[in-house]
Image (tube, rainbow, N blue to C red; front, side, top):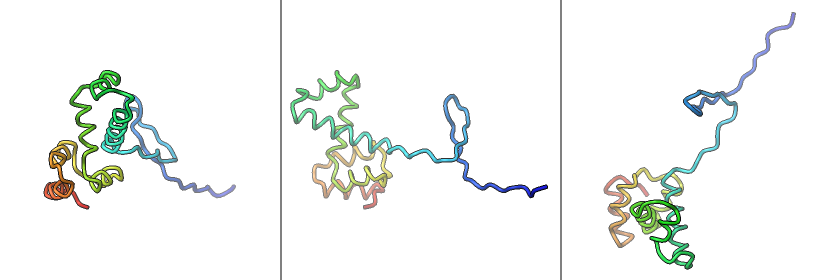
Length: 123
């Protein structure tokens, strides 16, 4: 009679479709944070208008089927200072959209970074 064999592996637990729990041996790839995707979409929208593919943001709104406030939020994110945008893209920004919109009200990038630091942003 042979000795029992030991197998070691890492099991990753996921809550899948309809609340079912599944187990897999490989971790799922990480998705980009929602805020980073929103920032990238904002840059894409701005580029479409600047290149003349759409006449204005209202035309994009109609084409995408989203509200005007949503387009405004996406475009406003593109007006943030480069260090803040970089932190968003690399997932290092703990601020939420509401806080970022308050930061974007400042026109000067240095002022944006200062306001962001006051509300918890770290560069």
